[in-house]
Image (tube, rainbow, N blue to C red):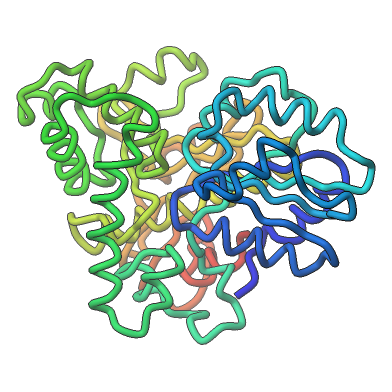
Length: 372
């Protein structure tokens, strides 16, 4: 199954280094090796492998190499300086693809001396648009049950998908988390994660979780930031022109793996929508240099809309997700009428699209099959 971002990466490789980041087991290594098939002479090196590590340090590859793939390079001391020197002195015909997860994305946000030397692409789990033309083209229930990570999604036995998820969570919490920060109370982190799985789609109070876990609100905030850095969760904050004020408001939490949501079918549906929208915005930002962000809307008197697509600081569209209610949601109607925001209501159980008072109502499968 071809990944949507594949051709964009190949195009960018002719210009600069390409960093490919994303959650663990989202298919980065598979995609990198698939791209290598387009080259006559390619080399894949994983820093975790002792033999590969020696080749990396000595830069001991053949001068005929056209594509160099460096996996897990962020584990190398002073890896940024290494890449800077490698890129600045590389022969003209060498293209470089660097893959990784949390550390690459954190580095991308911070910026460094590598600025101007790389393009970033983020690979997220499968989406409906990405499985068009496959046997799973309209199988939304499979996404809700298994999530979009390639291995559980494609597994023949649904039990194997559950076993994958159990091992995946344990590996992230007990191994990957320590690549970023030392955690002294691992049980508290695990309990925080467990509570978040039951609160998807609702504003999350750090104070409330802190009381349940018996830690401070600042510790809960640190845990959530860590889970976000590991591509386990994403925070969606309420939109406000004053970004600092927005960050002080209660966020909503969504999981990159939709199947981790333990609340109910409605929460899983909203979670899947959030990750699909985020994936589309990442593509626009990574490939077009845009400044898209995902937020939600909420007033002090409780009027709330699930999502707001923000472009260059302004609302481009507001979106409400529903399981079966095709009647226009009152809050969506309120924001559309008062502020003239383009509005869309996306409904799981909806036979055909229609428009009411300027608001588009679109079947869930139709909408998310059409966005990359």
